[in-house]
Image 1 (cartoon, rainbow, N blue to C red):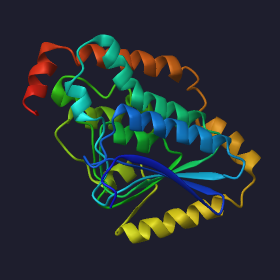
Image 2 (cartoon, one colour):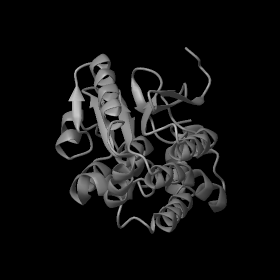
Image 3 (spheres, helix red, strand yellow):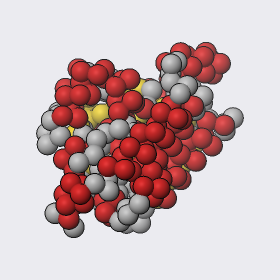
Image 4 (cartoon, rainbow, N blue to C red):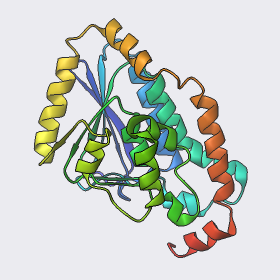
Length: 251
């Protein structure tokens, strides 16, 4: 398998499959996040695409969140804000995209990855897709992805996993809380179901889907500003003595 990070798109039967990959458990550095946001925006504007599927490469992990190497190297608030804006930009691209985005979550997902799953319009997973918000462990919080997770799962579920930052919550729990629509036993079953769902959606009226998407995301028009503010908060906290000491333990 290609061991270099990538974002790639393949279009089959009017479905754009957008796949990201990074050898470090699909943790996403800024350049990959920027490319992912651009690819989603372009697919939204592509007249040959009716539905989008968001997926990641590899078997074990959907997304391990932000790149730890980049996190460790943040030394000023401006750099911190730019770093944490990476996931904000992808979430906003998904929010503004006029097409339904199906999430294909094949394995564990952490931090920002949970935010990406929550920002899809219809999210399907395997039983291996446990979720975790570990940010509080290092002295920050899931500030940028919080609005997307809260919107999908509610404040109660979001606060539970944010506070219990050491624990993975099983896919079945995430399904009960509304993050996942279905949970499958194998990746093969997941892929069959994702393909069938995407192909079926392509038979619907695109204009109706555009209007439905607007309704699903109503009340989020302020997210460009909100997520930028949240990114600034994270950028400030990541410079705290607490977080700097915590991060040393992971180097």
